[in-house]
Image 1 (cartoon, rainbow, N blue to C red):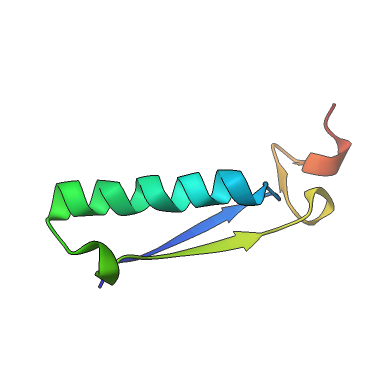
Image 2 (image 1 turned 180 degrees about the horizontal axis):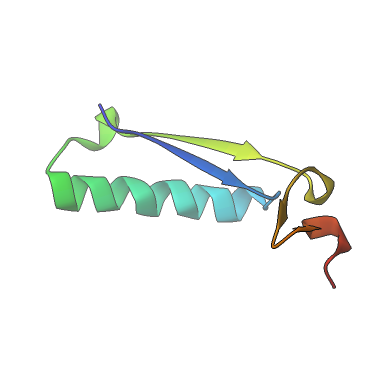
Length: 61
């Protein structure tokens, strides 16, 4: 059973639905596994809880 973990900043429910659907389709098409076996876990972090290039995401403009 494939398990995919996505770590990201907050997104709308609509965007997360689309993401889960597309990731599931990719595994079904590529690995030929049943959609029921694909799990997608979304972990969301606020902009003040992660950073890149030495800077908090909340501080970027």
